[in-house]
Every structure is written in structure tokens, then in C-alpha cells.
Image 1 (cartoon, helix red, strand yellow):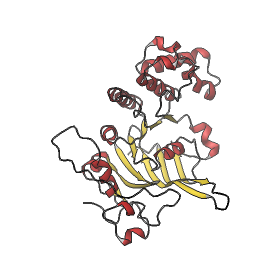
Image 2 (cartoon, one colour):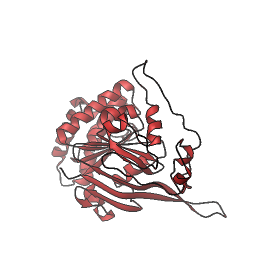
Image 3 (cartoon, one colour):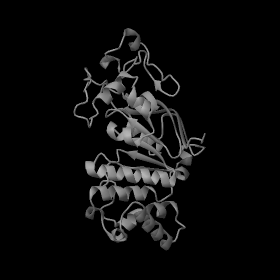
Image 4 (cartoon, one colour):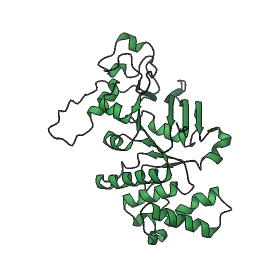
Length: 318
């Protein structure tokens, strides 16, 4: 089996939030002990509600933020702050908003060349331009787009530019943080097809952050379901969508739209409020919203268990 390109073990990221005049600072546990392996040429999707820790995980893997604890290995290198500069070429990110991530004052050619100017200062201007034009062609844009500004493009074209910029340094891993959620549905499929083609051609590994389970179902190889900073279920896509074992995963999948109007719809409506990440319950964080919860669930948080299909639940679904 091919060695993983990314290995995460017990990754955690906490934030300290100042309290009021007489109150103590609070700790936000945005990410709590997440483990995963990502293989070259594969896509690992991270799904869950807003606030579950998806984007925090993306920032840690891309070395935008340092983990509070745990270990991260990328391409065989244990990542520490001293290694960030050399490893950022290996991992690149594509953000959700393609317009907000592009400098409106720069032409596309300048935007694409910037990573090379910063990371490869010895590269000649002619070679940088040749590389930028190569990337423009690779993502399906035309040569004349090289001298245009971001506002002159549609949303889908801007996202192609963002993808081209992420590929300028020949990365092995792309972190895709909701890369199609800001696009029209008709354009989403074009960008996803482009990402699939690039993955096959360049053997890229994708960490795909998304809340859209219908997209995940067609795009990912493996899925991690997160809830309040913890992984509650981890499985190959086919297993998870066919038979989710965690009640939270079951509830998420029940909200996914279906193309068949005659299909039976058993939507699960969760009761209760999402706990605060500054005051996570002692036991299973999902217990107060779970219809299967017992007193045992409120005692200690369950760990992921299982082989291929892992679930963190004392009463998993069959």
C-alpha cells in the first residue's frame, strides 16, 4: 500500500477567549484529537455543521495555524513551525470565495506568478511567465485571460484561477475549503470535473471541506463526520452513505436532497441546541440532541472504534 502523504494524530486546536471584567478567560476547543491518513490520488471529505471544526482543521493542515497539540506529518516530514516554509509548497489551499481570495488590483498573470516570486526567487521572469501560462491552459482558460483583472471573470472562471494559483508550486496536497459552495449549481459540476481531471493527471491528494453531502457523495473516497471539534464517524464513502452508524451522521444524511421525487423521505429533525464550544459536555457532545442517548453517554466521550468503518458511539446504529 502507498504511504500516506498526510498523517494526523490527535490534532487539536484551542483558542483562548478573554472574559469580562470579573470573569476568567475561556477556552474554545475548536479541534479536539482528530486522526486521519490521506493517500496520494485520494479525496478525504470532512463534513459537519457550521462550527464543527472543518475550517480549523484546514488551517492547521495548511500550516496557517499551529496545532495546540498532536502531530502532523506531510510527505514524511514531521511538521513543526521551523519546517513550515519548506513544506508550504507541498500543501496549498483553495478558498471558498474565489473573488475574495484574488487581488483585484493585479492582473491574472501577476497573481499566478506571485507564489513563484516568493518561494522561488531565483526563477527567471520568462520561466515564471511560461509556468503561469501553462497553468492557465491546464485549468481550461484561454491565453488572453493572462492580462485581465479578476473582476472581468465569472465566479467559475475565478475559481479556476484560484486552482491554477494553488498548482503553481507543484503541490502534492490541495485543501479544498468549500470550493464550489459559492458557485451556481451548473458551474459546480464543471469545477468538480476539473478537480477530478487534475487529480488523475497529477496524482493529487485532496482534503475536501464541505457541508454539501450530495457533492461529497460523488466526489470523495473517504469521509470523516465531525461534531464540535471531534470526529464521530470515519468510513469509506460507500459504507457511510449506505449505512451511517452514528445518529448524528444519520441525521445529516436525512437532510440530503434526492433526485427521485417518489423516494421515501425520513428526515430526522434534531431537537435541542448545539452546545457551546467553550462549554462542551463531559460525555458525548451529541448526547443532549440524540434520541438514543442514555446516562452512560453523558459520562465520558466515546472514542472512535472499528476497523474500516469507525464510529464514536456507545449505541451505534446497525
